[in-house]
Length: 277
Image (tube, rainbow, N blue to C red; front, side):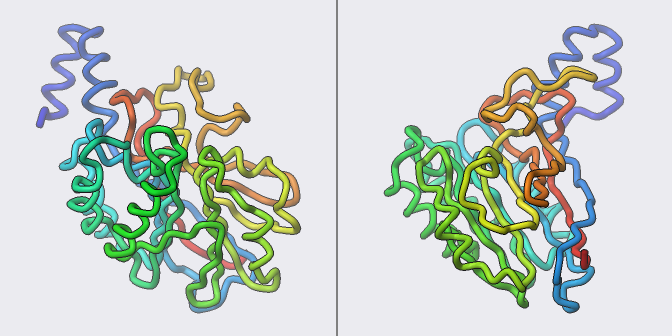
């Protein structure tokens, strides 16, 4: 592992080589734990002050080093989260992906109270449409203590967690999902692709949406938006967004990648502190 001193020496000797090394080997593994307050309407008293960690876009597979991911998982475990949520793209599909996932999934961080997740487009195989592949991942994740929500609602201590299935996989069903929500109770929504927030079917939902998918663009020039984003709505980069109907969305930058390069967009673990709105 190169030290900070060695890296700065390399940068001083050759700025171009140092910058290339930084974007390829340093920043893609430089995880940032982002603390945030998450005010939730009607939050039960027993969850006030609870810790909810969001992880996204792990991309377990040939492009992301296992040791790096395990190190990130250990950081999350030390936070002792009450709830852990995953917002999709657990893997990048490969020939031996199920054996690889079977080794990695048992090491995923889990919440002391609950662990929920939704699937992303990469969890549906290389075509993003193979439900058989997604079903196998759901089984492996369940064995690792992670409950996948596919257009359904679960509860933890009277907090409703609604999980939308993936948009690009053609599995998104917001009408069905929100029909199961009790509007009098506290609720959060998990959705992999932030473009889902712009589609009809959200009814009267006015709470938070936690999303991923964008990786924050992975490379962002200073003071400019990232040039490449896998979304239709180009304002959906990363961080917090105000939406119509009183909704708010937070987009996590993810900790993995499909191409090992990041610049000015560090991989992210979001640490939410729940509070009553």
